[in-house]
Image 1 (cartoon, rainbow, N blue to C red):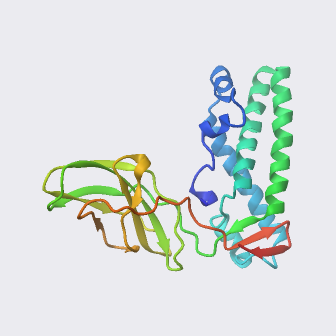
Image 2 (image 1 turned 90 degrees about the vertical axis):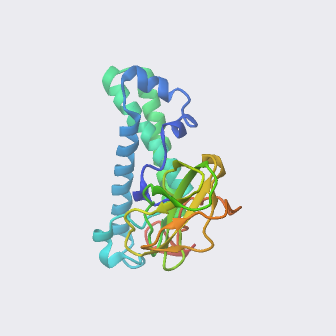
Length: 255
């Protein structure tokens, strides 16, 4: 699961699975859905932090420093992802209704406000997932080539950070490079986060064929050189699994 601080849990296409006409409405009313997605992330982050501060002082592993760490260790569960999507739609229709005072928009606003409230309740009941060693989403790696015996080709690359506990963060965005005959692909990570001890590299001949190329995490400070062709490794994950869940305020269960 991605961290809440890794970026918006949903994108505009994901909103269409809840409201098929959202892109058309946003275009007509000149509503920036990316901005609304970001606003929903901010508001949910504030809400989650308030829950952790107000109701979990005795069970939150980071309770003594919660104000400092904020929500940097909170993972996006499927329940929270749904909450984010519905709250974004609530915000979008709130703007649309405010612009036009249209009864149809008011009905949509009321619908998504209630659905978002229900999704929030389900998220809190299921539990707010926390990780003990958060690994932020990796930045897009820097790609280059070095002299070698490789064949020419175009490669798509993503990278993820790994903690000393072996937990892997969300993969970076995918970037691509074309190599020439007699060269090898070099992958260089960018800005390792605190706590990262290594990184995994995923490479494919398209964005849909990314596979793990490292036998184990490459130590921080080193680069990865692709030699001998592509390995048939596993596909990229979607981030860390929660170590603990804060439920309802005063209960805690392990993931």
